[in-house]
Image (cartoon, rainbow, N blue to C red; front, top):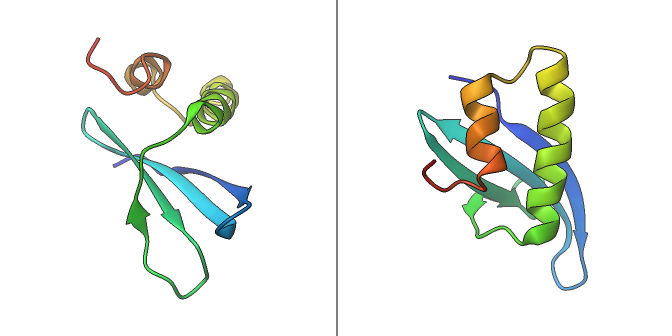
Length: 81
């Protein structure tokens, strides 16, 4: 199973969030964590989250850390291609 792609984001209502995009087969899910000891929860990403994921994934793809099939899913914004 590939490693999740993660980053930090500041939300005006929720404060600092940890965001992770996780793959399980062809399925891509987004999870967020509000605090260190809080549970991870599923959420629907906005355009900013997708842009950040694409940028980070392209950097990891250049270094061989993300596979081509995962890049196709990310570029299609999680939809079937």
